[in-house]
Structures are given as C-alpha cells and as structure tokens.
Length: 312
Ligand code: A2P
Image 1 (tube, rainbow, N blue to C red):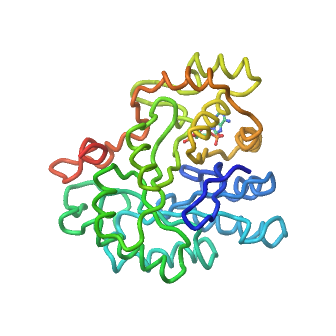
Image 2 (cartoon, rainbow, N blue to C red):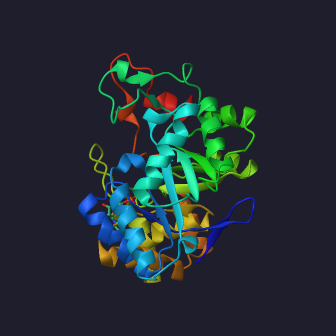
Image 3 (cartoon, helix red, strand yellow):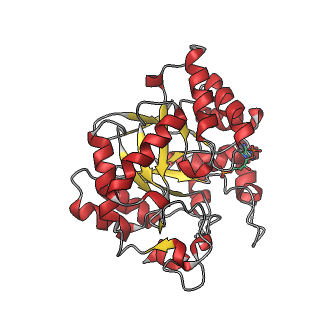
C-alpha cells in the first residue's frame, strides 16, 4: 500500500478508515471487516464516542492473527475539553485504555478550540475557554510529553490554519508532523498545503468524499458531473475518483464507511491511477467549500467563530 513517510522514515498507509459518525454498534464490524480486507490505518478520536468498540475490533483482529499491532497505524485525537499541558496525558491514557493499546502511532490536537472540562459540545459562551487563557503552546507541551513518554510515536494537529501552526512551531521542541483537515476536490486548500509542505508537515484529508451531502446547499461532491464523467471513462466509482485525486496530491485520505462493499471499493482506489488530464479537470472543481463548516463552535457572545478558526 502506498504510504506517506514521516521524518524518521516511519510510513503511514495513505488510505485509512475514518470512524467519525460510525455508530458504536456498527463500528466494530466495520473495523474488523476493514482489517480483514487489508486496511492497516484506522483514524479515531475520543470525541467520536466509539473508541471502545474500535478497540474491541482491533483486539479481535490481533487475536485472530489477521494483523499484529505493529502492522497497524492507529491515530486518535485529543478532545477540546482536555487542552492544557497537564490534561493531555490523562486524556491519552483514557484513549489508550479504550482502544486497548499501549501506544498510538499518531496523536492529534482535534481543534484549535478550548472547552471547559467535561464539555462534549458547547451550548453557551461559558462552556468555552479562550486561546489566550489556554494557549495552543501549552497544549503542545502536553503533546510533546506524550511523544517523549512513547505513548504516541508521532504528534500533530487537526483543523489548524497557518497561524495556529506558526504559533506552536515558534516554541516547539518537537515540531508538528501532521495536520488533518477537510480536503476534497471542492476544498483543495492549496495555500495551506504549500505551507505544510515547506515545513515538513504531512496532511490527512478528512471528509474526502465530501461527507455526502451539505444540508444547507444540497451540494453533493459525488454527484458532480466532472467526477462522474471521469469515473465512467476510467471504470472507477465517483468515490474512487475523489479519493484518487487527493491521494495523487500526496495527501492521506480517511473515508468513513460502515458498509462492507463501500469499504472494499474505497480500499480498491489504490488499484487506480488518474491521468494528468483527469487531475487538471479535477483541479478546476475547487470552490473552497467546507462541508464541516465549523459553525457549531459559534454561540452567542462566544470567543470562537468559524471565520476566526479557518482564517484568523
Ligand atoms: P456509509 O458508511 O453508509 O458507506 P466522508 O468520509 O467524506 O465523511 O464520507 C462518509 C460518507 O460517505 C458516509 O455517509 C458513507 O456512508 C459514505 N460513503 C463511504 N464510502 C462511499 C462510497 N464508496 N460511495 C458512496 N458513499 C460512500
């Protein structure tokens, strides 16, 4: 399987299984089936509320001798209510316990947004803490401690813009190695991608299939005519075209599915290659459209807006 190489030459499979919005009762089967098919990379997060079930599936796959721990790449993410240097290791211990693992391959700060302890999703301004009160640099110190203690082999961030990255890079002892952001043909993030490339930061695309439908705009990535035409001419599915485009830009993808045939279809993307002409046509689809728009962080008089998260 094609991989992305980290600074120490560790390799992460470029295609992984996403588990966001995978129901706990479905995710066990999805993860176990995926590993049986040949998936080696599983993307998790404490906030997805299903790490125990993911952990059971990983343990079962290892128990059945399908893979060893060493064959797998497991990523997880620190929730917003556990920012701050002293809170990272305890949160990571909980994730490791839930996943039944001794270490993660990659641990990410989930959002550049801080919530009060115990908050799952915020409802009012007082559920938040500002980045001046708990700076990203403090949380990064906790991430560095996780790395130094061997609890995570690599550390990085998610949903960070260039300025968030610069803030932690200025004082980091261990530089971030990954930024996981939404990315697909409608949101190509060329500037952020160049910045990350220049700074040796790898990228992972979440929602690489466009999360199917935007409830506000009714926009559907996989129903785009250019994507469908390329799919027809190359004997691929629209999902495979979308995934290939991002993979061929050198970015990892973590499509979510709990459906056996779509899991296989997504994995088989790796058997296809788009031509230069296909890539050029897909490049033109960029419209800066976010399916995960960040507006859920906006509450009356709250400190965060979607605009300041993506652009400030
Ligand atoms: P399902 O789990 O029923 O397969 P994203 O990863 O961009 O957030 O997209 C996930 C959504 O896309 C899920 O609703 C998932 O549904 C669906 N999906 C996953 N793989 C495919 C595929 N190959 N073709 C169409 N839809 C897919």
